[in-house]
Length: 225
Image (cartoon, rainbow, N blue to C red; front, side, top):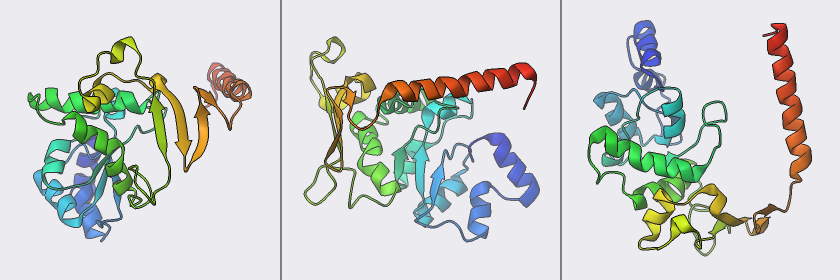
């Protein structure tokens, strides 16, 4: 249900919504991750909630493609687990999860004309523990707890846009950027140290990406699809 035309196409072909079709096929289950979920009816929302389906919310992708705004606030009110996603580079150029945090927090406020919805703490949880729940990995990742994988990031808060600091949740959601991250640990392994990658060499990766780009440009000029 990423777009209204998709929903209308399914309605025309199967006389039900995409959610209704999944229910008919017995695919609405707690291990299903439904991505986008923009064009939903109240009945669809109730069905997702009853089946405990997990949702991946990708607001910037939905905005860039003019798909619409997913009804995340009604989802949360029904107890639906919602995690924050970026989608891919084709519809979200920088894949900056901090930018996604800020967008998610503000998009629903303006949609509902209510500055109290999607508070910073709720949105930060969507990017951490709720996202882990979507993947059914919350026993291993998503929060800093004994027995879980040591997945963590460190930010440099000594930045003009992060000073002064009153509320950490608000600062992370509304002011922080991906470039503020100085250290990254994945399962205890130091993969970003002082903003430098420890496991990858960027220059050859950049050159390979530029090579792909040159190939695409040549194909476009020659009319190859």
